[in-house]
Amino acid sequence: MRKVAILGATMTKFGKLTQGLDELLLEPSLAAIESSKLSEKDLDLLYISNMLGGELTKQVSLGTMLADELGVKIGADRIENGPAAGASAIKDAFIAIKSGLFDLVLVAGAEKMTHMATEVISEYISYMLHPVERMSGATLPSLGAMLARLYMKQYSVTSEDLAMVAVKNHKNALNNPYAHLQKMVTVDNLLHSNEMEKINPMVADPLRRFDISPISDGGAAVVLAELEIAKKYTDLPVTIEGFGQATDSLALHERSAPTDINAVKEASKQAFKMSGISPDQIDVAELHDAFTILELVESEDAGFFEKGTAHKMVREGQTEIGGKLPINTSGGLKARGHPLGATGLSQVVELVWQLRGEARGRQVPSATYGFSVNLGGFGSNAVSLILKRGD
Amino acid sequence: MEGYKCAKCGRVYSIKRAVCPECTSREFITVDMGEECVLLTYTELWVTPTGVSEKPLRLGIVEFPNGGRAFGQIITESPTIGIKLKPVWKQLKEEDGKALWGFAFQDERKGLKSI
Ligand SMILES: [Zn+2]
Image 1 (cartoon, each protein chain N blue to C red):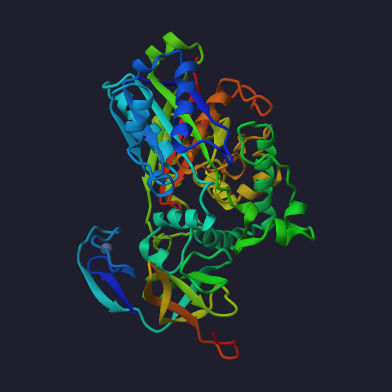
Image 2: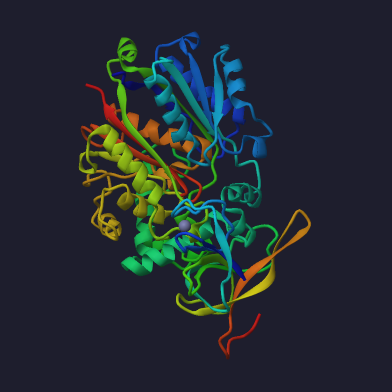
């Protein structure tokens, strides 16, 4: 049975950058090809992950554009699955290699956002929602807030508990030179200082600014190869052991329990089944914390913690580096940043670095298995991936 | 306010569907949702989208006695989970110069300032 491995895995720094969308795709691609010890001509397929290229930068046909810039004439597509485009593109590359039709596939993802006004970006992002909910004025944070209110009531979770997720992720990002926000924050200065309303204003009650990931520019790229071929180029292949993907009602109000993200449950269950391992074998996880509440919910729905207990794990430090399951060692979406189309790939890049022992300053000791969840829409589409350090 | 009841399994939807996600039936009966629903969860949105005049914009999920749920603006000064609301027809948003109308859910308790 063919196995799929990752060779080069790179990303640009995330943040407010000067590069355009084309450069945010090209730079990490060149670096990933080079660090894979390949030439562009070795590639036989290319996928782009991007959500709003047309809307924000007036550029689509991104697959063609990157193939052309790399001087190759191979098949190239852009994958769009909201902010889960990155993991979806990895999934498609995995399937392409697994099928036996392709051996070496480049996946590049990017988003250029910070040149546009926040209201404009929020409007385009809300195109992911059900039109009936959007028509009433729904935005992504408003749906996150409705889930949070219900969840917090049901499981006695406080605003401090949510802030602790942000504090942890900001702390991790201090040791990640690629992160957008490299600033230490504390629960006290987020929730108990005189300046709270200024630095951490309410966005969608109960979610405040620091419960929400920033708008970022950034790009990332990963080269995937059939394992036996990968071994010719590296002593440190990281294999993709499994993936899962599932959808749920586009409209939040139609979900049976709006406190749960069933798409994450189902996608993760599939990924664990394909990998033949269980959640307690995972050493490091990158979760889609577009909102702090999502990190808690996903850590439960992916199978790591009992429902309603994730905040206790955060309080006990179990999700910090050194804890039972370090989550978002990169800083997560909250602090590494969230350039939509690049996010899922940057999760994989962080896991690859962790599994190769290259996550300087934030390394989880001898990590063997890594796990990621990338969300498209507001929990309406989830992609889970399981990676393993090569033997 | 109209809803759509699956002719086979009986689940009620506030959004018209082609296929029932519960049982895959394609047959629906139009039903009246009634005059009263309960607030299940809500938010007060301070960063509001373009085309909406209210600030904060209160949004919520409501449930009707027939089990059907809907999403919409909540018209009240003091939202609380569990309060009873009444569907009312209202301009919700303006988009591309066009007024978008739909149902919102109004708090009818006495003594509250009306908006
Ligand atoms: Zn049905």
